[in-house]
Structure formats: C-alpha cells, structure tokens
Amino acid sequence: MSFDLTTIWAGIIALAVLIYVVLDGFDLGLGILFATERKKENRDIMMNSVAPVWDGNETWLVLGGGGLLAAFPLAYGVILSALYIPIIVMLLALILRGVSFEFRWKADTGRWIWDAAFIGGSTLAAFAQGVTLGGLLQGISVDEAARQYSGGWWDWLSPFSMFVGLAVVVGYALLGATWLVMKTTGDLQERMRTRAWHLGIATVIFIGSVSIWSPILQDGYFYRWFEGWHILWAVAVAMIVLGLAWALFRALHVHRHDHWPFFASLGLFVVTFAGLGLTMYPYIIPTTVTIYEAAAPRQSQIFMLIGAGFLIPIILGYTAYAYYVFRGKIDVDTGYH
Image (cartoon, rainbow, N blue to C red; front, side):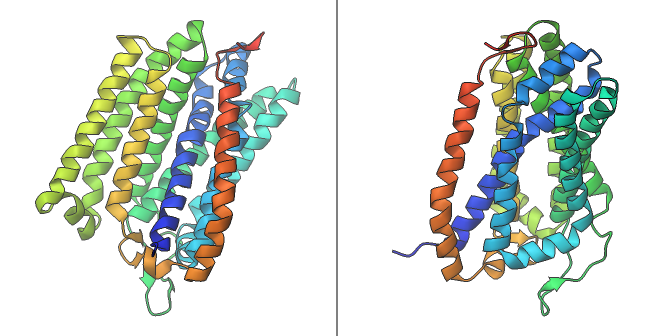
C-alpha cells in the first residue's frame, strides 16, 4: 500500500499549528485582556487560570516549527528568510511574556513593570503571528531556479499583513475572554462575558474582511473560492462561521452558559484555519512552491513519521491530562475547585 507521505506531513504540521493557535491563543488573549483589569486580585485570578498549562501550550509551536524544518526544508528556509523580522519579534515577545509570568509572582514594589511586560509581550506576540500569516498569504518572492527567497527585508510589511495582525489580536482576546467566562465567577466573569460579546462581533467582522480581501491578493485564491462550483465552499464556510457566531452570542447572553462560548470561539478558529488550508493547498508558499516541491526525501519522511507516531500521542496525552486535572473554576483564595 502506498501512502502520500508528503500530504501526511503537511497534515501533521497543520494540526500542530492549529492546536498551538487554539491553546496558546487563549492565554495570549488573557495577557491582552490583562490591561482591562486594574485590581491585583483579578489579575492574580486571570494568571492563575492558565498557570498550570500555559508553557505546555507552546510545545505545539516547537513541534510545528521543527516539523516544518525536517519535512519541508525548502519552505522553512524561504519562509524564515522572507518573514525573519516578524518571526523574531514573535519569539522575543513570547520570551518576554514567559519571563514576566514567572517574575511577576516574585516582585513586590515593581510588579507593575512585569504586568506591563506581560501585556506587551502577549499583545506583540499575537500581532506578530498575524503579520506572519498575512505576509505568507500575500505571497513570497521565490527564485525557482536558485530555490531561495528573492525578495527584500520589508516585503512582508503591507496594509494586509498589518490588518491580519490586528485581526489575530482581537481573535485571541475573544478566546481569552471566553476562557475567563468558563474559569471565573462573579464580577470578573460578568465583565468578561460583556467583553466577549463585543470581541465576538469584532472577530466576525475581521473574519469577513480578511475573507473578502484574501481572494484579490492571488488569482489562485479567487479561483479556489469563487470560480464555478468552488463557490459552494465559500457559501459553506460562511454559513458555518455565521452559525458559530450565532451560537456564541446566544451562549453568552441568552442561555448564559459558562463553557459553550469558549467552544464556539474555538470553532471559529478551527473553521477559519480549515478555510486557510483550502485556500493554500497544495501550496506551502502561495502560489509558487507546492508541498511536493518543498518536501524532504521520502526516506527522511518515513524516519520522522515513526518518531512522530510515538511522540505526538504522548504530547496529546499529557496535554489532555493537564486540562482534565485543572478543569474547574479558579478562585484567588482556594485555587481550583
């Protein structure tokens, strides 16, 4: 039996990136929302809600980046050359956030500095991730003969990439707000419920705007969504997004659920990520390099797949276990209950 190892590896990397986005997205969003709460007690509750899981969430970023290097080395080299600045900014911001997360608990008189670092690191990391996505979507100049990046340092900088960066910040803030609706009680929960409502409206607007803007960036994008029967994909995705938005708003202020707003928000990210996959496939660098052109040798893919077959279930297992153990509400005095 013959397996399309290249497609399998593309799926593995896409899955790792998706899991990273939905998991680390809500704790980055929590950091963004940190600026909206002034009371030390509320900030402590917010930070404690992700303390047991936040660093484990970033495992998936390492897996996605490492998998890209190993399985698609050409794409790794070209993408990092083209998007070096926003990727470095993202990594430095994640480091700043991690340091501030730990130092905040030790600081007494200077805690405000680490609070500001946590807010800044979270917001900058989210924005840089969106800019990186926007820079990839708008296209990267590739010298096909030399198999290398042929553009300049600032090609990634455009109105579209900035817009996608802002969209990711708002979307992550929505994830953070609905996470806190699920994990907190009292006044803090009610404020986050209201913020989630407004952020949900903004997120849906951003999704629609990026969806309209993206097809005019590349001819291939327009054909994939709007030529012939392909328009059915666009209609289906739009209907699912609207359905999830309706479920989000009803769960927030009609049924007043604690858990369903978070799951509806995750659904919005999953659907938009799937739409992104449909937009790009089979290209890994739109619309110049396919996954097959960028793939590592078959022997290397087989060797890595064996390792991934052992590693990924372990990561999934301990991630699921950590979320199960810390599944309850968080309280500043009693912890989880």
